[in-house]
Image (cartoon, rainbow, N blue to C red; front, side):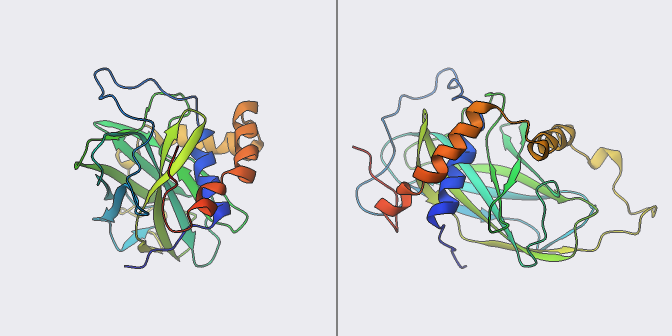
Length: 255
């Protein structure tokens, strides 16, 4: 599969999406102690990242399709505070933030992903929680965490071709490192069922968290963001690209 390298600006937005989502959450009780980062020697990513299991096509207004994001720790230390960031790029550049309904699971608990639009009409959404209830994933040395993800598209989504890629950010308080990137996952968006037909999705196919995602999108559209999040995003749009500029083909080592 093809891996599309992130541009400095897009990487800065990915980091900003994580840091601007909420204050750092408290770690889970009993979580393993970790060092300041999980970067290994050399220029390879510490986390091998893979998207797999997703459908080739989604119906607009149809049910959810499930896929998995595998995070494999190739280092000898525990990697904590790990936040994937999904980037959606559509061929027509017509996909709007409120149309993809993406949720990820931390154990049995689903969390909605809120998308923002870049200047290039790409959609960026962090695996985070605006209430600080999700501390990020923890991946032990040599272990793999497989994150369940599910995606649906609203009924007003036009037929399209979309590519999903995941960048992986390790959060360090108000800073972050780029520690992984997946290959591309390409899929089609197809016309959904005729309105009013028996094949239309029922209420049971709608996640309890979908309404929360819609409210979050409405807040984003009306500009009702917290000052702290806005300041963080503005700062990182200028400085976040340094994560890639310092090491164009791999993660930055922290000193």
